[in-house]
Image (cartoon, rainbow, N blue to C red):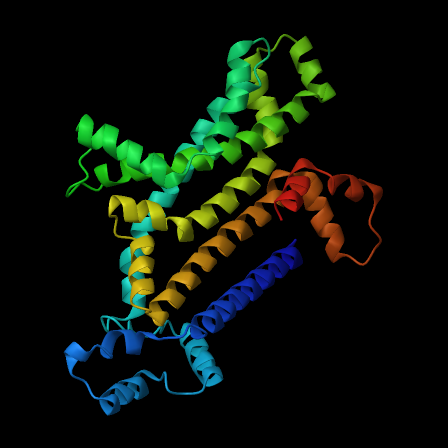
Length: 339
């Protein structure tokens, strides 16, 4: 088990390095840079020699490969550089913005999970009739709704028309309500689809019929027996969604005027602030990798078959037939489908 954990951590570090390297060289390939965008304005009255001196002070006049290793070395000391637009340390900008985005991501995924569980329960409840059919079609409808459109509708209805939620100088709680609803709707849809499909597969297993024959209620069968065996694919999907949400809340934070990584990214793009953009890419990639690493490490804990498979992979003996069966578990199949 220990070798399995170290192997997954090593893979996560490699992914982070590749993500940072790719982002650095792609951003460096842009036709302009932050120094030119910030200081080449004729209204500032700076000469070309003064602009070149600024470039030298910021280290952007050095060869590209030298800049890469300099910034890469700064990562190990927590030095992400300085914003070209404001001169503020990038680390300070990210530490100020990241908590707002992480709070939004956590509340959104939490609400999405609650909605997905309730919907999956009704959609897979035997004898629910038309109500069951309606909830089975709901995920396809929800996943097709654009996030910015949901945000505008929520603003118009709950804020401007009803006045229930204040969006002008809101309290911390008010500032989370509408953005959370905006992100939870499209996030809940894939969770519903995965849960419903997984629950249908588990309900077809013989042990469910045995439990039902013993007189257990459908609610007891669902929450205690079926759901526990259906969670692994949903955990995979939830981890992927949360990781994407940390770096993908740009539109929602822009629409609602929230201070977070989204608004920080928009400002950095408009000013071609490469150090800030690299910092945002790094924090988003780190969150994505860490969440999915936790999900990977939870699999052997939740499913003993996967635990045995992970132990067998670290051994030198040939794989047993039981391990091949474990490889076809719903969690493994779902993760391969997502990839």
